[in-house]
Amino acid sequence: MNASAWEIWGVIAALGAGTFLLRFSFLGLLGDRNLPPLVLRLLRYTPVAVFPGIIAPLVAFPAATDGVFDPARGVAAAVTLGLAVATRNLLLALFGGGAALYLGLWLF
Image 1 (cartoon, rainbow, N blue to C red):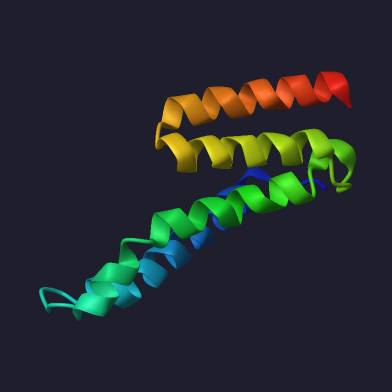
Image 2 (image 1 turned 180 degrees about the vertical axis):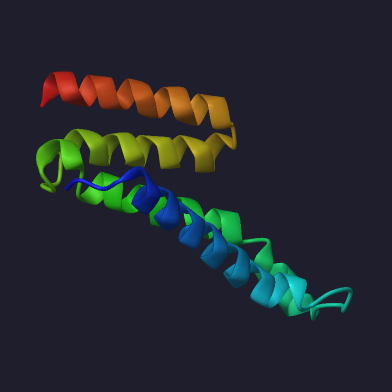
């Protein structure tokens, strides 16, 4: 697919405007109004919900294996999640998951 520089910049500008309008639709229009406590509580979980949404497809259908489940990546994700939940230590979870991935790629 060949696209000119103007087409690429047009897509980037359209995506930027769309993102701004989507965020402004509920953040900008609210202004200084207070949100109900339930909404505030639910908004705290948004980042926690976004990460699994990004990572789960990469674990279940990795592009490196053409979308076929790879046991090494599954084990690495499980080790990372287990270490994070058990220790609540981000660095330990990251390095443990990385070590599990490299060990899994070597074993499988």
